[in-house]
Image (cartoon, rainbow over all chains, first blue to last red):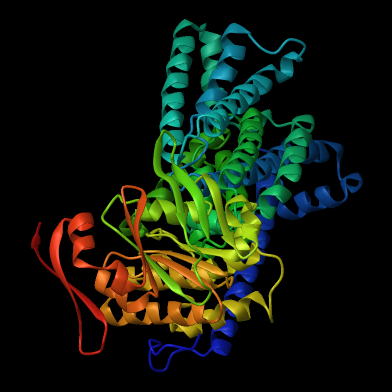
Length: 358
Length: 251
């Protein structure tokens, strides 16, 4: 095969293209490192902020050398603020990573845990525990709501997986079933709200708004284990997921078993979203905005898109956590409200910027 | 060689028990026929995108029963349409195809991908996102993705449908040069004059069956055009010796 003459005059030489591509890869690596640095700073600010006015120096000191600081300060930092700050990071990673994978495997830029009714299912599970006290037998009371939320979120994803595997449901069908689940669970939650006592209703509404204050070290360990176990598999699927952006036919002709890839992705998405929601309740926009911010920063090569989505999600949550403490002095605003308020303008900006492509 | 091949969609068989004589290496075969004849379905079955019974031998290998990964090493497929919203660059699309194989044949995957883009003449587009390309450029990028793994069998579904005259010529010229290196190309085409110009063999399909197979002058004839396409047409040679199909009216 020989060269044809359609290259434009003055076209780039192979060496120039390879150099330019390598420069892009370096830029993306540097950007990822920069984002990580910003995240570390946001995390420290998050730990430092709160009703008890502690300075940055004092906070970092108490984090690095607890024995050298007064007991009350160490307790505030290590038992109150740190679990919440770590929860923000872990939940941000989990939701954004799940959103990124979901958007790719469903080939839908609007896909997020909300789209497929996962969050509604989690809310219904939590509502069952809060309003009717129904839960998994043998589960301690303090874990009942979280366990129910996990069970229902995971169960709804299993149902979707079943429909994909057994009934061969395509992406459009999957989204439609997800929307149906969303409305069904919302209706069931409304019914439970209707019959709930004043106290249970208040508790349920608080859960639905999403809050980091439920995080403690034992629950965090569980989320950390899930994130640490799932992330390597997600990153391993980076090339097949990248190829899937070229269309299902193209991906399959490249040797990818698309149904298997989609199924494995849905399992990972289920674990990440169900665990995150069990810990903090429903938190919106992170799963949607995180991947879109990453896409604007590093494009759609999933080797970069997935980690940068995770970092973006963690950063959004970390900043939202700080804002939730500082927005109204003396009041901890539920983080779900903050992410929605921060997320909305970001979302509008994304839609307007990419409007022509949607 | 295709033997007793049947394929279709769930609850809708399209092709039943067709057999196709062996295609020689180094030749281009055009699949032609009216709409809904089963041309794309046959191509998709050979590419492993549809379940199929029977066999399709490529040398000693039955590609219908190869695992997906092994098949992707010997069969390249270019779909009729490419997604318009993909934010990947042309080069990233090709790298994803290459990284799904084992290790680079020569040099690095990056060298291999850039080399193919240069040979097709779209090296300038390497770092352009696919969604910013015109329809024709996207088709050229899709062609590049199809050949970057150097498959022995190249299956192209209307590869020139969005291209201007010059790029139609260049793509088919590339296909011909590509197969001359000992490979086989099966190309779905609608333009019979174009098919006669570029293919050594013509396979005419209608209603999921093979109606006629042969060299262009034997396959593309006024009786075939009348019975398969329902048109009265003339088939004449131009001053360059190529067949020209001219439709006069409906039968």
